[in-house]
Length: 131
Image (cartoon, rainbow, N blue to C red; front, side, top):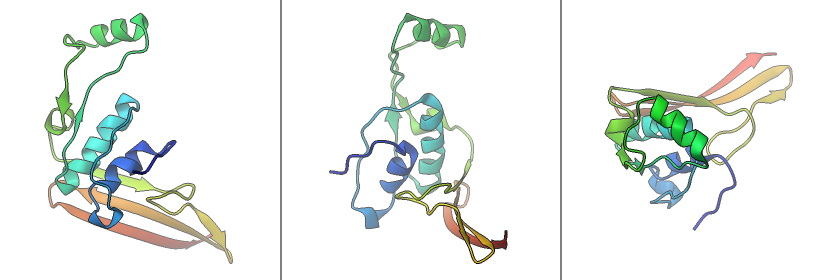
């Protein structure tokens, strides 16, 4: 078991990498993070189930105003991301998934992950540019 305090999207992506030994992610996060996680999982053939968790009546009312009628529905990956998707993330600070931006010897080093659901490809891009 791995407990993480933040970085829920990276935690979800780690379930799709056999080298991590992580098979399942359980947790809660924001709805935008859930959509991003689904886009990444769609690129690698992963699975997802999630539902909205409301903290108060105002959040329930907001969901209703947005046209959500079943507030207890469980969504799967294909309901969250219906078309092909591209997921891209660049590390800002060091994390479990990506290295953060580094300034060394007059250069800026970045680490980016790019995933494509149409081709089921995953690419790591490491850039070194003059600062």
